[in-house]
Length: 276
Image (cartoon, rainbow, N blue to C red; front, side, top):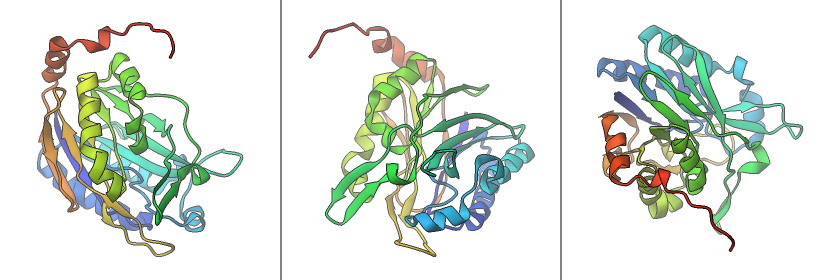
C-alpha cells in the first residue's frame, strides 16, 4: 500500500483548511497514493468554544467531509480523516471528535468517536479540558478494506494500550493514531508510545499529526508537536515527518504484520489473573 500522510497546521476556518487539503490530495495522487491520512481536528483547530459553535455542523452538513467524499470519488482513493470536530446530540451540547474513513466511491464506511478525553494539566500555563467541549465515544471500531483492516483511534487514546490490543485481536493490521499532540508531551512521549503500540500488537501504526502554531481568528492560538510517524510491526520508525507541514509518502508491506506476529505471538498469549 502506498500511503500519504498529511502533516497540517490547520486553522480555525474550515474553508481555508479544505483548500489546503485539496492541494495536498493532488500532490499525493500525483505521487501514486492509494490512501491519504490526515491528523486530528483536520477541519478546525480552535481553543474558542464560541467560535466552534459558529463554524461547526453535524456530520451530514460538514463541508470538510462533503469535500473529501468528492475528492475520494474523483481520484479513486481512500481518505482517512483523522478526525473532524462535529456537533452531536449530546444533552450538554458538546461536540464529537470523530474519525471518518471514506472509500474510493466517496462513501463513509466507518466512523469512530474519540473515547478518551484529554483532561490534563501539562504545566501551570498549559491546561486542557477536552471533556468540557467534547462528548466521549464508547465503541471501538475496525474497518476491513481491500487495502488492510484498520483500527481507529484518536490522539489521547494512545495512552490506553487495552484499546489497541482489542483492535488488533479483532483483526486490525494498521492502527490509526491521528493527533494534535502538545509540544511538551510530544517531546517526552510521542515516539515511545507509538512504537510501543506497534510492538505490542504487531501492527503498522500510522500517526498523522498537526504541527506548529495554528492560525486563530478568535481566541488563543494553539501549538502542536508535529512528527507524523509511521511505525512498522517490529517497532522500526519508517517515517518521521519532522515539524514542517507537507505530504509524506510511505510504502507498506502488509506481510510484515504476519511476520512480526509469527516471531512474537503475544496477541494469543493472554492469561486470566486475579487482583491486584
